Amino acid sequence: MKIRMKTMKPTTFLARSVLLLCATASHAVEQTKQKPNVLFIAIDDLNDWTGILKGNPQARTPHMDRLASQGMVFTNAHCAAPACGPSRSALMSGIRPSTSGNYVNKNSLTRNPILNNAVLLPEFFGRNGYYVCGSGKLFHGAHFIDEVQGRGFDAYYPSKTQDLFPWIDRFSSPRPLNGIKKGVSRYADWGPYHPDVTLEDINDGKTAKWAAETLLGGELKEPFFLGAGIFQPHLPNYALQKYFDRFPLDEIEIPEGYLEGDMEDVPKASGKQRHIAWARTIRAAGQWKHAIQAYLASTAMTDDLIGQIVGALEKSKYADNTIIVLWSDHGFQLGEKERWAKYSLWERATRVNMVWVAPGVTRPGSTSNKPVNLLDIYPTLASLTGCDPPKKQLEGNDLSVLMKNPKASWDKTSLTTFGYKNYGVRSERYRYIVYADGSEELYDHQQDKWEWRNLAADPEYAEIKVKIRKGIPAHHEPIGALQGAFDRKRTAR
Ligand SMILES: [Ca+2]
Image (cartoon, rainbow, N blue to C red; front, side, top):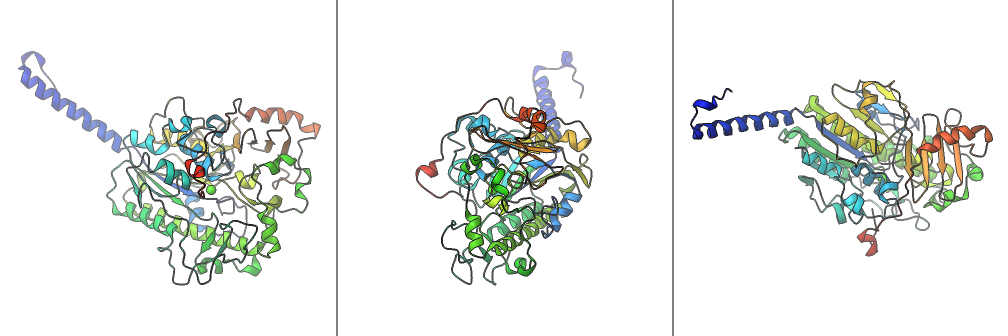
C-alpha cells in the first residue's frame, strides 16, 4: 500500500492509516495462526512399565509405543519431584521445588508467592494468543479444585471448579475389592468395575472422549493448547474386566528390580521421606501379583484412551500443525526396595515417560538418553511455538536442541527433589542421592540398572561424586505454605 502523504487530506490520511493498521493487525493474526497447536497429555503415576521405556516386558502399551515411533522419546527423563503436587507445580511454573519451596503434596500453589506470581503454562499460552482448554488431571487434583480453578484456561471440562473424580462407584462387590481393610489407605485398592460399565462411563474415558470430540469437531480457535490429563494408573487401579483379562494372574511376574535385602546399604535417611510400608501389607495379604496385574491393566486402559485422543488428532484437520507432548508426572515402585509408592529418589520413582512429536522438528523413531527433566517441558514448548518465555522464571532447558540433533553436546544433569534438601541427580550414567543429613547413595546404571549396589562410600568414585554434585542447587528454599484444604483437614488427591 502506497500512501502519498503530501497530497492527501487529513481525513483521507486518517482513513488510510486505519486501513494500514488493520492490514498490519491482520498480518499479525496471520502470523499467530501459523503458530503450532499443542496437545498436552498427562498421565498420573505411570512408571517405566511401558513399551516406550521397557521397564517391564509384561506391559502392553501399543498406542503409546506407536506415538513414540512417530517422534522422539527421552529415555532418561525424570520428574522434578516424585509426587503429584510438586511435580506438576514445577512443570506448570518451570520453577524447581528448591527455588519455590513447593516440595510435597500438601504444599500450596497459590499461597506460595513465588508460584502464584509466576506465569503458569496455561496462562503463558493465553498471553501468546492461544485458545487454552483442558480436562482431567493436569494440575494436582486438590490444587486444581481448591486453588488454581481453571486459571489461564478459556474452557475446562466439565468446569473450572469441578474436575473429574478419579473413579466411579459401580462395582459388583463392596470396596475394598482387594479385601485389604487395614494397613493401607482407601486408595490402595484394585479390581474390575461392574460388567455394565463402559470406558465412556469412567471419568478418564470422559476426558479422552472430550479431547477426541473437541479435536474432531474442528471448531477450535487456532492456535490452541489442549490439555488432557488421565488419572490412571494412579491408585486405586479400577479398570474394566477386559483389561485384567489381558494379564492372566498366573503369568504375572514380581518386579525384576526386586532384591531381598536391598535396603541394607541404603542410608536410614531415605526412610524419613514419606515411606509407605504398604508393600509389607500387600504381600502379607497375598495381593502382590494381583496389584501388579491391576497396575498393568490400568496402564493398558490408559493406553487405549491415549490411542483415542491421538487417533482423533490424526484424523482432525490439526494433525500437521500440532505438537504433541506426552508425559507422566513421576514413576512408582511396586515392591522394589520394600516400597509401594512414589515418594522416593530412586530410579523407578523418578523416571518418567516423555514423548514429543513436533512436526518438522522431531524425527520419527528418534531417542535420546541425555538426562532431562519435566521442568524442561515449559521452555521447550516456548521454543517450539516461537513464544518468548517469561523472563527470569524458567529453570529448565530447551530440549529442541536435542530434537534437532540427538548427538548435540549436553553437559546437564537431571535433578529430582523430595522434601527439603533431599536431592537425586541423574547423569547419563550415574544416579547420586544426598539427603538433608548428608548421607549419600551412588549407583552406576551401566552396571547396575536396579540400583542394588550403593557405591557412595567407595573412594574410587570420589571424583565422579564431585562432578555429579554440581547438579545440586545452591539455594534451598524453606518449605512453603500449606494448602488451604489441609488446614480444613480434607483429603488430598
Ligand atoms: Ca502422580
